[in-house]
Amino acid sequence: MLLFLLTFGVSALSTLLLVRSSNSHARFSADADFGGPQKFHVRAVPRVGGIGIAIGLVAGVIALAEVRDADEQRFATLLLLCGIPAFGSGLFEDISKRLQPRYRLVATALSALLAVFAVGGSLARTDLWGFDWIASFAFGAACLAVFTAAGIANAINIIDGFNGLASMCVVMILVAISYVANQVGDETVATLGLMGAGAVLGFFFWNFPGGLIFLGDGGAYFLGFYIAELGILLVARNPTVSPLCPLLMCIYPVFETLFSMYRRKILRGGAMARADGVHLHSLIYRRILRWAVGSRDAKMLTRRNSMTAPYLWMVCGLGIAPSLLWWDDARVLGGFIFLFGVSYIGLYASILRFKIPRWLVRGKR
Image (cartoon, rainbow, N blue to C red; front, side, top):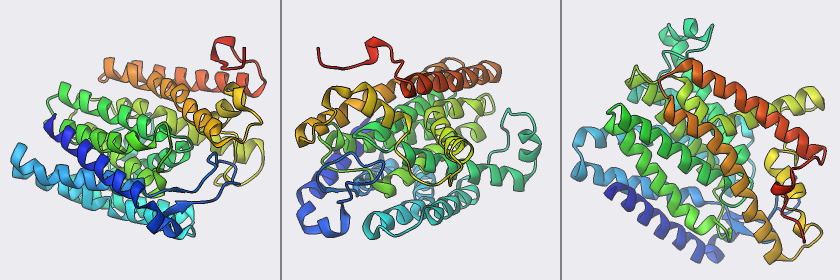
């Protein structure tokens, strides 16, 4: 708990300093693009919130030797060092606005590959037919881990569209990983999960609801890498934990990404990586929170933006809740993964066709 409070406090203070000094670095750090398909803000906002999170985690790692022991500190240090390519590539995009997504994915894959050798972040089992054979080879296990980390990092970046959406989902996932790790006696992963949750909450305090600072690609890619590695380590270090447990914890951003790829390539015949404005969170913003439709008042749009995230927090929780109860039962976890996919598609289709349950709609009375 002390490390949680430390990472929260340092992250919150560091993020506040970034917000208060935004005028001095706005020409490098601010997101002033208001016309993109996934842009829902009306003023320039710094998008370097990942810096505050990273500083909070570094403070936590420094304190680990005092609170726990030097071996845990060494392990945590190696994990953070492995994340430098993922964080650095995203931060470069936040500042330069010119690094293509494929290069960020390659950098994240490099981070995951470093983690394979530095902290044993290989995925040697999957509980999925066919993939366990691949995972039985050292090279295959490393490739699966790299693919998983890069995919989840990209998924977190995709859902990072509204104030508090991605960051609170990450907090929920990290707390869930920490809980399961504690259940199986893995204090290292449990501690790293809580440290990460504290650092992200320090950023969340300034991001939600007012949107004073954004997570940015640096924050999104690093946090995607971080939760992916903790999930992989949870499975690699604890044979009783099913690999489908961390997958179910992350099922909302993962399924959002897979469905978006299918929608863009198969249904619309376009490029899978092309940004669009018809993600589930975008539809909720436009069609459920319709009480501000047509208004360009900054205060109203910020309120509408912030009220979108809680709907998706509930969606994220639908995957996390069963993973906490049946973390060792692959069949049950697989059933919930299938159920989530069916439910997601049903909800998406109903909103797309304007067949929305009345209790979901926040409209004018």
